[in-house]
Amino acid sequence: MDVTPPRRRLAAPARRAGILRAAVDVFGARGYGSPGMAEIAAEAGVTRAVLYDHFSSKRDLFISALNEQSAIFLGHVGAHIAGDGSPRERMRGTVDAVLSFAERHPAAWALLYKNDVHGDPDVDAAWRESRRSRSAAVAEMLADDIGADAGTPRADLIVEMLVGALSAGAGEWRREFPDVPRSEVVDAAMNLLWTGMKRMG
Image 1 (cartoon, helix red, strand yellow):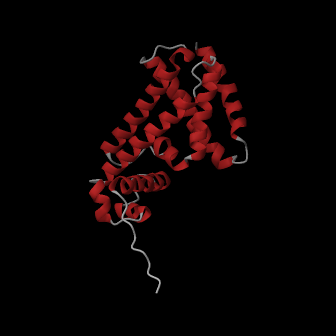
Image 2 (tube, helix red, strand yellow; image 1 turned 180 degrees about the vertical axis):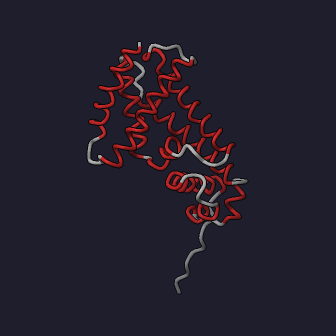
Image 3 (tube, helix red, strand yellow; image 1 turned 180 degrees about the horizontal axis):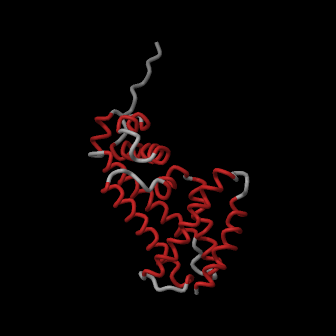
């Protein structure tokens, strides 16, 4: 007689990782306010009790997912900036990295850049600080290329404007022009952004 083998329990780190993946998908699609912990637990394939073993509240879960995806985003951008390239090549690498992240990880992109009103002051503050920290980190990577000293308001502002423009453009691209290759979008963005940045310099 065939006997179905018992289902193996995932180790705690694997369960936590699965919950975070589910949280990114749910929060990215529906924002912070609408979904409840039961919905996220179901998406992760765990019980609410297991979810609460790892995260004390929806706020805790959201901020943990936000911090994780922010670190992944910065690692992705940093890996795409050619260390020995020209300023234009490094900027193009940055633009391509941002757009490729939006293309490949739409839920994470929405979590990081789309859903900016959460109805919870602590979550709103964490989201704003996360975005500010990402801009500061990218500004430090590109300081020499954008003609501003790392850690200065000018450098952070330039990068925030860059990422803000790409954020709006990425949403429009994926929604209205999904058949346009990313390389063409990068070309168009560079024509606009690089020219504008050189004028600012």
